[in-house]
Structure formats: C-alpha cells, structure tokens
Image 1: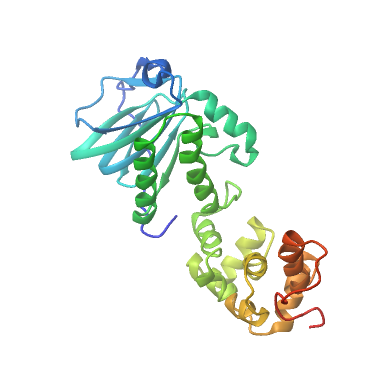
Image 2: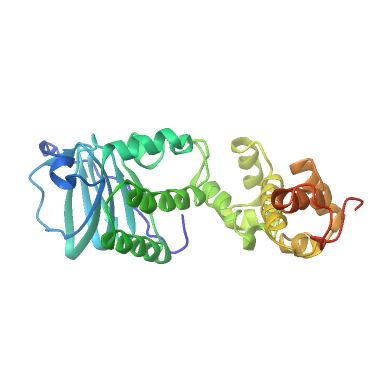
Length: 312
C-alpha cells in the first residue's frame, strides 16, 4: 500500500432478508453514444439504494471526497476518500453516500476498448478490469492529484479510443509498477516489504531495510520469504538493487562507483559480482550494449561512456 493511502475495511454481509436485487441495467449506447469514454462527477445521496444496477460497459470509479458505501449482492463496504474501484459489466452494485458531500468520479468505458487492451497486454490478466471480483485499491494524496489531473485533461479533450487509452494506460502501468505478484497466502506485511524493496531508501540498506519494512523479527521474515518467494531477503533486495543499477547504467554516464554506492554497495568487486550473476555480463558491457550499440552500432570513436570495469 502506498504511504498515506487510505485503509479500506473488509466487506460487511447484508442484513438477513435485505439482500438487494438488481433493478436496472445501464447501456453504453445511452451514455457514450459514438464516444469510447465518458466522465461524470456526482454528489451521492445518503439514502439506502432501492436495489443494485449492472451495465454492459466497464466502469472506473473513485471517491473524490467523503465516504462511499459500496453495495453488492454479497454485502457492503465503506470506501474512504482516495479509493479506486474497477467494475466489470457483471458486477452489480449500488452507491450510497455516507455523511455530507460524498463525491465520486465515474468513468464509463466502451467494452471493446477493455477487451482489446487485455488482449494486447497479457500481464493485465486477473487484475483491475480483468479480475473476477471488483478490484478496490487505495490511492495516496499524490496519486489522487495525478489521477485528477489526467481526468481534467480527459474532460477537456476528445472522447475517442486514443484519448481513452491515453488516460487508462499510464494509470494501469503505474498501478502495475506499485504492485508485486505474490501467492494468495502471502501475508500483507510481506507484500508491503516487497513493495518497499523497490524504493532506493529501502534496498540501499540491504536485508535490514527489507526486514524493517516488514515490521517483523528477522528470522520470521527470512523463513516466510524463503517459503513464499523462494528467496532470502538478501537475494530479493539484491535483485532490486541490480535492476536499479542496470537502468542507471543504460541511461546515465555516471561512474560505476557512484552507481554502486547509490544501491548501497561500497565494495565495487561485490557489486560487479552481483551484476554478473544477475545479467551474465559486466556493467561496462551492459552500458555499451544499451547506450552506444543502440544509438551508434559498431561505432568505436567518441567519448567513453564511463570507466571500463571488465577486469574488476
């Protein structure tokens, strides 16, 4: 979970005999017309909804202000400000405001758009719009500000498929970058530690940073990581370190020693060994391949990209 993101409570089952029924189906032809995407903002009534509705389109919803009570056939859940909700056509639901000024933003998406996105990007399978159950994700204030800026651009521009993808793809890519794929039995604290391990402030401290983010005793973290991840905390963190170093080598001219120190490794020989284990080549060769050989293949003259480190 991102720092500062809201905490989302588990769902509450409906009261006996009060399971809501689906009373209406919304149609994309009525809402979108010839467009691919539409955005609306609404202040919610606090009265209990008479029933659920479903639709033949996909919907992205977020709580802009206040609290949303989200009703489904299996119960209800209170979603605080900053909650992001992905809904498929078959996800019957209803919205209810809690308190005053409960404001939501709803984005209607043509079903063909989402189907095609899923076909082009297999990594989305089982997530967001492609999950069996409604996906609910918390967003922190910075992430909400970015989302609202994207929504404002959408409101001011065209509503065609290109505009829809320009809005959706950065959001989905950012959510994927903020997540890690773990088995269902992984505890929340391990997921939090794995997410934190992508941050230089964590991986710079090695396994100690991972354990600190987990908030559990080191032996317990090590046993759980080996069982769930198949890696020790040290191995997991070193993989994140080397991924960061590989990106820096490809995109900068900074000296190797500076990049090694940036990932928390003052011993250059140790850094070199870890990099070779991860990428089967040296840092200098990686830099040549991803800088000069991409832009000027076969070119052997000009300023060096950095000190040679093949013999370290």
